[in-house]
Length: 345
Ligand code: GDP
Ligand code: MN
Image 1 (cartoon, helix red, strand yellow):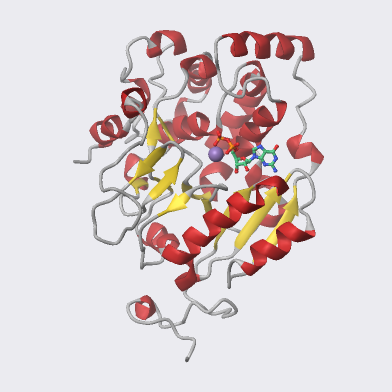
Image 2 (image 1 turned 180 degrees about the horizontal axis):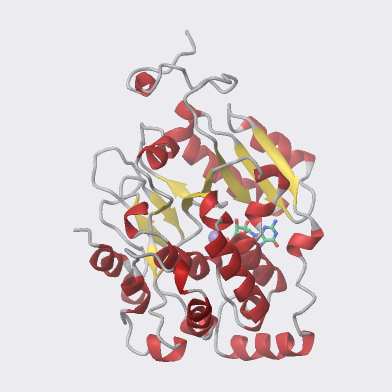
């Protein structure tokens, strides 16, 4: 074994992807997971799938985050699940805590009201904190200071298809800043004021709207009644449990100011704004739509949805399947709205 990657992986410069090769063809990127110690087995499942289908050839490092310290057991077992480097980081309290300007009484009342409407997880503080962290805080962590691209990986997801190119390098070479596999409708009650707040922000900052944006993806009504509840937002969003993106997107002036506006408005707590709709609204408004990429070829499942290509490289994933659930789940797919508004066939 020479340790060299086979063709065509050497096509870039010939510098192989061995985990310790400081001159490898890897670009500046990491796999990134926010995860709890109790989710160790589910994290190992995700790692095994992604290592088997892709990362064993490229050895991109794994960067793990947690709001409490990782256990030795978690560190040992995840380190053993990859040849690549792994690192473990505790999130500073200031990044995770509920911000001081959030009114406790209003928050308590809102949680109750949303729970009565059946909005999932609305009564769990940690869920609100997680959504806020994933929206606008994670990239401020010291461990990501010098990192440019990340691939977000949750515990308990599945990857089904062999992918034989360096996905991060592909993003860079093709001038892409955001990659997704699934796009869905959201619960309109969880984002009632997200669009109105966004419009206020745009009125103050019209300069941030990209010329060739994908606003129609956000405003075209897909599900009757949604746009009325949300003040004009379709609730279509990229499902961010899978996300391959350029951190400069979030570090931009546009997104920094946008997140600050949303954070002060309080909807991460008074409602249950998810990082998925927040990232999606920003991407569709502030980015040129040609920079957003659907990874049709990455077979993926986060319960209860699938992205299943028909390219002969997959196992365990029925081509074209979107969900193993009912008609209602099937109706949540926003991919056609994206293709229509992003000008792809
Ligand atoms: P869902 O996908 O919306 O059902 O939410 P998940 O429960 O999967 O949470 C999303 C991601 O955040 C997963 O990677 C979780 O492991 C992680 N996560 C959620 N809450 C917490 C938390 O309180 N602490 C830590 N460390 N991770 C969390
Ligand atoms: Mn999840």
